[in-house]
Image 1: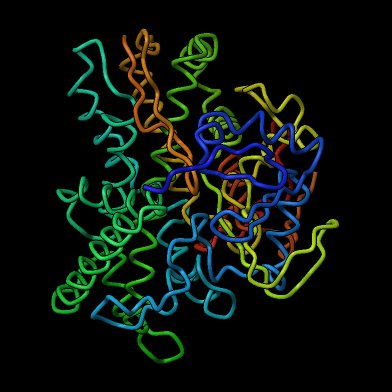
Image 2: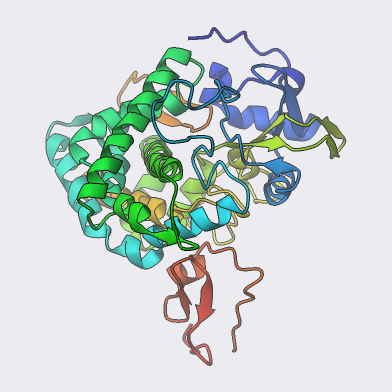
Length: 404
Length: 43
């Protein structure tokens, strides 16, 4: 693991993996918004970090100057040939549609969206509820649990495995690979282990599904035709890997952060138990306040944006979590208001790359909280508990010991 | 009250459907449409 040199000046030398940023990015964003709303760093790669709602959303919508071909916040080896160590179909398109611009983005997104439509997601509710109940059965009687590892982490991976049609028995392995890719991207060995594991697994699944197609996303991607032609294997592989990667860490982090909030804010916890009708606005508010996901864009040509001389090839970190804490966009953004009525948050991004799985994420978060609060309405952080946060591309608690 | 969705501005969040399924429908791609002629007064 690379050692992180402590950051002295966040405006010109920020590092999203600095432990201070991972644990409490909020005060750093507040300082930057007042002094240097778009920070810069040369760590890893020349990168910009907007902190204002207006800038983040404007950049998200300017797909001409800000490409999605390279979306990793921790760049890793993204400039290397993706097929160098992989004996399989062409991976040059990465993980469409997230790592693509139109026109590839447009048709790959259209293939995915119906799987995550409101109505389709309603059909995944019983499975999710049942899963949450079983997890709670495992620890509700013991008086203590790790809300992150024993609960939050276990839910989204199994739901997305079901949608993809892959074995939920491999959930722990999927989680390991996804964490290698997103959370430990600074560690070349782990990053490679995750990418190889995931791609080789899906390569095997592709062959199997081609022989025995089922009623799942992977089978549909293999049998569908676009403009009269089957979808290239490398693109199917990228889309399947994306569904898993994007469907695991993100929602798990949102569930974990929400439980952490309720464990540390007893008034909010009691209110949500007493007024369950607040759940829809509470979900949106928790998503706003603890938005897990930062994506990256690549500057396509030299451009001066808001006085910042951005060079072709620079990264811009799409700081949706900071945008959601901007006092110009939200009244008292530092306060979680479970009944916040006006809440145009961008936890799921904005523009053409807005999260394709947001209906699923919202449902998982709501069901996970409902089931937890029904069984364990009264809980708090364990005394002396060390909560461990992960950050970078996806922020959320990885260890969150609670007692009840 | 009458209601209209501007298809050029709709971003497919499907929040309208989530909040008021009596008034809105969304297609497979999240794009919204209004399914009533007049919004019922109780809403």
